[in-house]
Amino acid sequence: MSTIQVQGLHPLKGEVEIQGSKNAVLPMMAASILHKGTVVLTHVPRIQDVFCMMGILESMGCICTLVGHKLTICTEGLTDIRIPEQYLKAMRSSIIMLGALLSRCGEAITCYPGGCSIGKRPIDLHLYALKKMGAQVIEEDGRIVAKADRLKGEEIHFSFPSVGATENALLAAVLAQGTTVLYGAAREPEIEALCCMLNCMGARITGGGTEVICIKGVESLHDTEFRVPGDRIVAGTYLACVMAAGGEGVLTGICPGEMETVFHVLGSMGAEIEEYDTGVKVCMKGRPRSVSLKTSPFPGFPTDLQSPILSLLSIGSGTGQILETVFEGRFATAEQLKKMGAQIRIDEKAAVVTGVYPLTGCKVEATDLRGGAALVAAGLSASGETTIDHCHHIFRGYEDICLDLQQLGANIRRIL
Ligand code: UD1
Image (cartoon, rainbow, N blue to C red; front, side, top):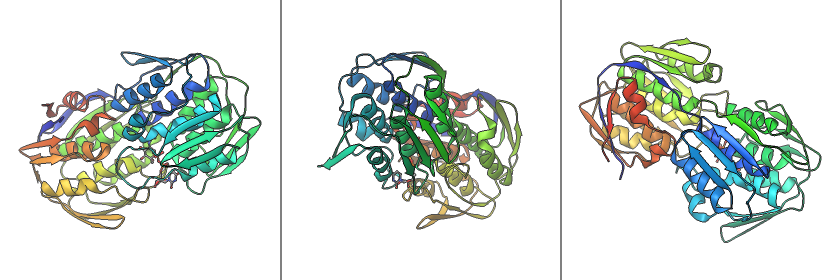
C-alpha cells in the first residue's frame, strides 16, 4: 500500500515545472501505431498510466524505450490485435487503442475498459463512430471484436462531446478512405494537441480544438518527434494546493490560455493570479471564499478539478455548491473529507459544502486519481498530520506529487 503524509497549515512558497499531460500523451501513444515506424515523444510524464500504455503497446509487438522523459515507440513489429485484459481493467484510456488498431490491422479485440470508479462510463459513442465508418462490431461476453477491411470517411454526429470517443474517431479516420467530419466533437486542448501531432506525422486534419473536425484520409504516415504539452489538470491541482495552504507559488511549463475558466473560478475564490507566457503565479491570503460552480466539457470548468475544488470549498468562508454534470459518481472523496471535519451534503449531482477552518488531519484513503490529489490539498489546509493511504491512484497521473509540492515549500513525504 502506498501512503503519503502531509503536515498542514504551513504557507507555501516556491516554484515548480509542470509535468507533461497524461490526457495528451495517452492518445498520442495510441496514435503511434497508425504508422509502421518510429514515433518519439518528449516531456512524457513518468506515471503509471504511461507505463500501462507502454505495456499494451509492447504486448502487441511494439518496442517502447523510455529514457528520462523521452519515449521512443517503434511500431514495426506490431502483430497482435488483442488488447490484454489486465491493462484494460487498469486504465480506461486503453479503449483509445480500438480505432487505431482497427485502422492499422483491420481487426481489434478488446473488452470493456476500467479506470477510475467515477461513474458508469459507457463506450456507446466510441462504437457508434467506428460502426458509422464501416466497422463490424460484435459484442459478446464483455468482449468487443471489431473488424473492417478499410474504414470509410463519414459524417459523425456526437450527441455529447466525449473526449475519448472524439479521439477514437479521429484515430480511425486518419487512414480511412475519404473525408470524415466529426460534429459535436470535444474541444479539450488535449484533442488539439493530438491533431497537431497527427498532422506532424502527415495526417490532414483541420478544426482540432473546435466542435467540427475534418479529417481527410491519407495512405500512410511518417516518423515524427513531438513534445507533450504541460498538464493543465496537474497545474490546477497545485494551484488548489497553494490556495489550501496559503502563500504563493509559481508554476511553469503550461499554456495559461487553456486555463481561463479555472483561473476565473480560483480568482473568485480569492486567489490573485498572474499569467505569464508559459506559466502562472498564484498568491493566496486567508480562507477561500465559497462559490458555486458546475463542471462541464471544455471550455467549461473541468470535472478533473472538481475534487480539488471540493477540498477548497471545505475550508471556504461560507456555503458553496458544485454541480457535477460530466460524471455521475464523482463525489466519493466527500466521505474522506468528512473524516477531516468537512461539512458536505451530496444531493444527487450536487455537493453542498459549508466551510470549516481548519480541517483536522487524520487517516484518509484515496479512492480515485483526482480525488486522491484533492486529499493532499485538504491535508495542506488541516491541523496536524494527514495520512493518505491507497496513493497508487494518485501515481496513475502525478509523476511525483511529493517532490513537486516540496518544491512549493510543503511538508509532505511518501512513507510507503
Ligand atoms: C477524458 C479524460 C478524463 C476526463 C474526461 C472528461 C483522458 C484519458 N481522460 O475521459 O480525465 O475526466 O475526459 O473531461 O483523456 N460517455 C458516454 N458514452 C461514450 C463515452 C462517454 O455516455 O461512449 C459519457 C461518460 O459516461 C461521461 C461523459 O460522456 O459521463 C464524458 O466522458 P468522456 O468525455 O468520454 O471522458 P473520457 O474520454 O473517458
